[in-house]
Length: 420
Image 1 (cartoon, rainbow, N blue to C red):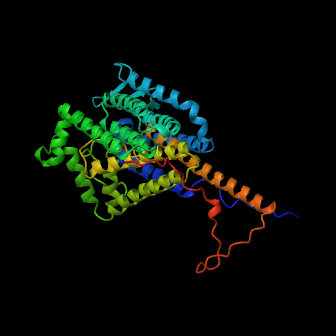
Image 2: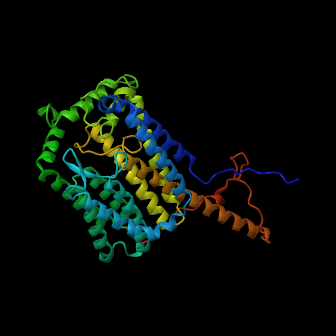
Image 3: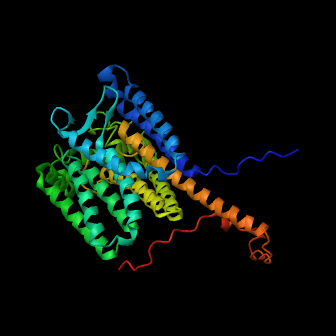
C-alpha cells in the first residue's frame, strides 16, 4: 500500500503572511478604538467604521490570495494599461464636482456611500508594475539617456498629478518607489545620486511654495511657536506617545483621540496606538514592518528573474517606506504630511491595494521556491540517469546533517558593469 505523503511546504512565505495578518488585526482594534466616539455621534453606532474596515479587509484578503496564485509574469499585459488608468483617474479626481474634496484636498472618487477610490493608492501599484517590466526589459540600457529621460518623465508626471490633489506625502512615496527600482535595475551611483538630489530639491521647492506647507516646515523646527495653529497636531502626537508610557493607558482608554488628534483613525492612528498600547505596542508595530522589509529584500534577492526582483523591491519599498513616513511624522522626525499607516489606518483603497501588493510579493516568493524545486528535480534526475561521480562527504562540525543548498534559488546576477 502506497503511503500518503503530505507536502512539507506550501511555497508561500508563511512568516510574511502571518505578519500582515497580525498588522491587520492590530489595525481593526485600533480603528474601532479611535473611531468609536465619532461613529457614535455621527450615526449612533460605534461599530460603523469597524464594520466598513472589516469588509474592506475581507475583500482585500480574498484579492491577496487570488493574486498570490497568479503567475506574476502575466501582469506584463496589464502594466501599461494600469499606468494609463492611474494617470486618467488622477486627472479625473481633480475635476471640480467629480472628485470629493475633504479638508481642501481632492483625493477621492466617491462611488457610493460605502465604496470610494483613492487614485493615488492605485498609482503606487501601477508604477511598480510598469517599472518592473519596463526596467527588466531595458536593464542593459538603464544608464543611457534613452531610458533615463522616459523614466524621469513618467515618474514626474505621476508625482505632479498626486501633488496637485494635493498629497505631497504620497508623491514622495511614489518617487521613492521609482528611484529604488531604478537603482536596483542597475543605475550608476553618480546618476542615481544626481536623480536623488534633483528629487530632493523639487520636493523642497514644492514644500515652500504653498504657505501652509511652509508653515509646517517652520513648526517642525519649533512646534510650540504656534501651539494652537500649525503646531497643534505635532504637539498632540508627541503628547499621545508620552502619555502612553511603556505599557499604554489601555486599549480604548486613550484620551488624545477625543478631539485632540486630527484624523485619529487615519493619519494619526499611530499616535493613538502609542497612547493606548504604549512603547511596547509601537515597538511591536515597528518590528512587524521591519520583518516585512527583511522578507521583501530576501525575496527580491532570490527572485528567479529581474522582473520578480524589481516587483519585490517596489512592493517592499511602497509598504515599508510609507509606514516609516507615517510613524516619523507622528514622532516629529519629519515635517507634517498626511499619509496612512499601511494595514492599520482606516481606508478601503489603502487596505485593498496594500493586500494586492502583498499577494504579488507572495507569488514572487512562491515562484522562487518552484524554480528551486525544478532545478533540484532536474539535478536529481541527472544523477539517477548515470552520474557516477563519488558523493562528497558532509562537512565536519555540522552533526553530519546535509545542507539542502540545491533547493534554494541562487541570488540573481545583475549586469556586471561598474555602478560608479
